[in-house]
Length: 113
Image 1: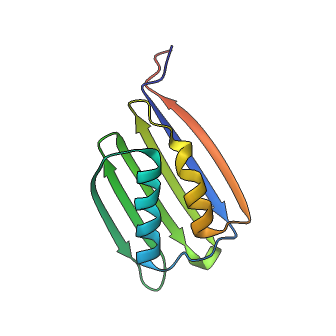
Image 2: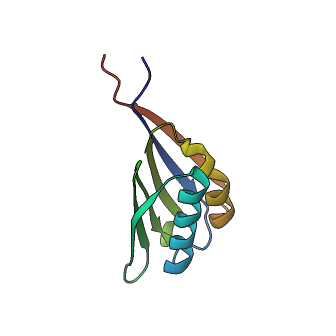
């Protein structure tokens, strides 16, 4: 049976450029564009003393980036449906944060067992 959606969880370690709200937001916008998704809304929040969260609501579900600069770590969710390929976002994400290590987990959503 084909999945209704794909949820990709990305762990980035050894990252750079995690504490600038504009950089994180631009990276998320590029990820949305690279996937061919339709951006409906995007919000970004800068935390004190550090860290950024950016969330994009897309017509095909959502994407988010959460950063922990004090640990050189970012957690990224890309949840897409309607045949979009979430992996198309990876080159821009890797280029933006320059991680030393990447872990990817994929969950197929909407499959009845």
